[in-house]
Image (cartoon, rainbow, N blue to C red):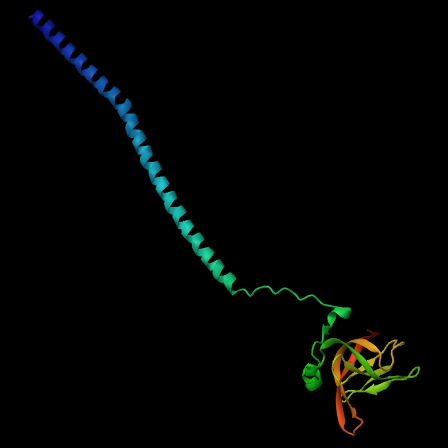
Length: 209
C-alpha cells in the first residue's frame, strides 16, 4: 500500500513538473520575438498614421499656398503700373526745335504756353530807353525792353519777340536764334494797310545765330 502511494505521488510530481515546464515555455514565448514583432507592428501602424496625417496637412497647406499665390497675382494685376517720372528739363534744353512754323503762324491760339526754339532773320528791332519798356500783346500786354520781328528761316511771315535782357549786337537783318514761350499774339498793320497777327514769344534767350 505504501508503495502504491509512493508511485502515485511520483506521478503527480512529474505531472506538476511537466505543467510547470509548459507554463514557463509559454510565458517565454509571449515575451520573446513574437511579442517584439507585435509591438513593432503597432508602432509602425501608429507612425504610418502620423505620416498620413502629416501628408494630408502638407497637401492642404500646398493647396492653400497655391490659392494665396493666385489671389496675390490677381491683386497685383489690379495695381496700376508705376509711372516713371519725366525728367524736368531746364535752360535751353526745355525748348523744342520748331521745324515747321506754319502751324503756329496759322493757329497760335492752340499752342499757348508751348516752348519753342527757332532761328531766322530780324525784320525790325526796337530797344526801350533806360527804365522804360514796350507793352505789347493783344490779350494781356506785357512790358519788354526789346521787341523784334523775326522771320523764321525759309518763311516770309514774322514772329513777334519780346525780350528782357541784353540785345547788344543784334540789328535789322541780323541772323538770330530765339528760345521762347508762345504767350500771346501781336497785331499790327502791314505796308499795304492790312492787319497782320504775329505769334508773340516771350524770349528767355535772344542771341546771334
